[in-house]
Length: 287
Image (cartoon, rainbow, N blue to C red; front, side, top):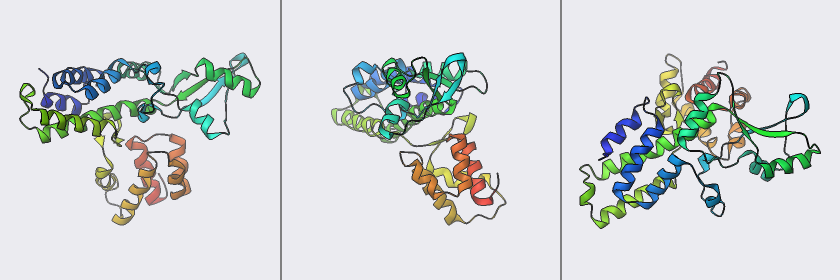
């Protein structure tokens, strides 16, 4: 029988693949008999059926990272494609990524060092793009950095960890076969709270330890030891960076000094090493 303690231990252990952890979570969801938990874990473990989700508006937002639109033409020459219409750009450049967690892990592992991940634009959107640019012999595709796909894995892992920790707090001596109806309802509420509110976090590089914004001030102080830092400016920067986690990235960049915004834009990543470098620029003027 899968226990919350075992699941929590594996979630914190960066050496255990998320796909393996999800199999444990799938077994736990069956034991708890919670349909929302089971449905979410099943989709992450086996992949999302887009036909089933086409009529729904609650496809996980963390599975829609923005890709960089390019096209390969004659003689294998590759060029970027710019779309002036924001709504159309989102439709083309932010497709739902339905792949299973195991597939995403493999896509990250199989890419060559320094290479990005390439996803072909679906046939319907590709036909629209060819017509829009007036070229029939181009093959449009989306280019993602590995950190875009790592962010999906980390979000799933953090959501699962948040749920497990919450259940451990509420049920320190959980005995699944003895749960009462109110306790099952409480578990269902915890599941929905996590699934409907994906955890925002910044990833600590290769260690893959979840780092929330609540811990971020301590990280800044640790990374910039020996430098004179105004605590109020630290809090101000954290608030600015929070804005960049959603759809307000443009406004966030306007709030930052030009050098910091350019650095973040160039790297297009929210792993901690990148953000720490941006912080150093923010406080010292140089990386």
